Length: 182
Image (cartoon, rainbow, N blue to C red; front, side, top):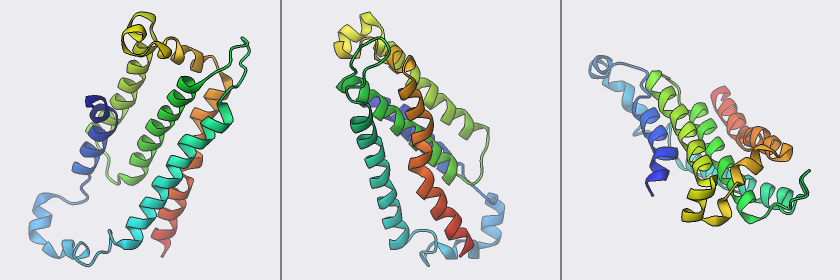
């Protein structure tokens, strides 16, 4: 389960832990800055259900589009792609959506946030590559053998991985814009 910490949890922890708009001295000098918290301005039932709805939307996009759009696709080499190919693309979509959502939600960036976020994506793809190599794939999961390299050679997979995350986070962006206007 450590993979989940590297790929998703650590970027979120570092970004939200370091997301500060005022210094420690200013917070002590002006404690009224924290009035919004007890008044549920930033987190309330509307925000909670909006996030739950976005999570459901992201899950629907990550599961159904690859499953119904890519299962059994005949590639140029005549190979029919199956469950492991599609599920790897689905998990890649999850990683992209998590990272994009983190970029959208973090308000104050620093070098640590950028570094951890980029390293988590790079580490994820290094792991996928390693798990697709013949020797390691046979030890971990034989069906993963060559999966990453098949994905790289597929134009459809590239289109899904580059464009679908933006479709998935579109409602998040619209919600944030709408929330800032009101």
